[in-house]
Image (cartoon, rainbow, N blue to C red; front, side):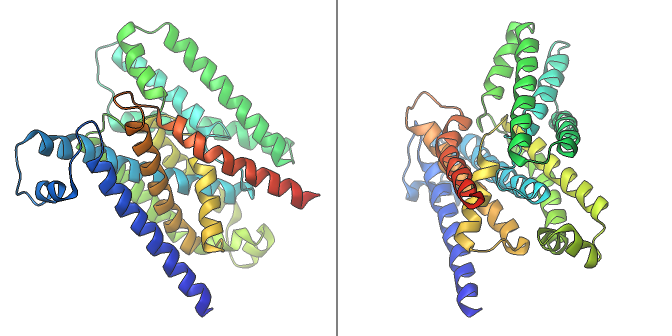
Length: 338
């Protein structure tokens, strides 16, 4: 027990240290680089009004905080879906939930922009939530007919392709100005974040995470099986609805602000469980948030700097590092099945 406690403390310290390192690195690195000393002067208010100060406060800090919040939200969303389906390869991107949210947000953006209206953050989150719930509804209907998780994943991928095809069809007939906005957003990126965006996503993600953390005990019981959870007094139908709603809100918030981001929701929870050597929700939920934040900060750093001034989409980088983890998980599961 003492050894496990030490391992948990060391793992949290590692994640916190990585978060600080990548946070500072992300602020300092870019087309306009600056030293940690200069950064400290800017953050402490000793250096005001300059170009570097404007870059830090109005461009880089909102983007970095968005990557932390949305990366953590996506990871926790993946953990909830893996708990719901009792399979480690379930995730919002693979099951087509992100694609459903993407379709709904695209339709909302085109409708508003074509009428000269701005797409409000809350409107986009609501649209993404409705799209995510629609895709989740199809997945749940299919899950009642299909018992194998591999078939369910394939169906989720197909739903994702259908939603992406419809999105592309809609974008084709949109105005040129709308297409530019949609194209940049649909590739997945943390760029263009404002403090108002960060405020809204902070409120949504924080409230949802608190509710998720309060469900730690029922989630732990549910991991032991539905019969065990019922014996522990868990209302299974209500609990399953709460899992769906919470995971959909988190993934919808990510899609509304940053577009679809791949593999974070699958890869990070698996890496966190491997690091902690446990699946206890009271530990894994905050650890998944930290892990998702670190993973997205790392990927965003690469997306911004490796081919600067050209910026890669965040999904391109998350796929490069996340897909091998998913492949390894599937191979290991196949080996256990044999």
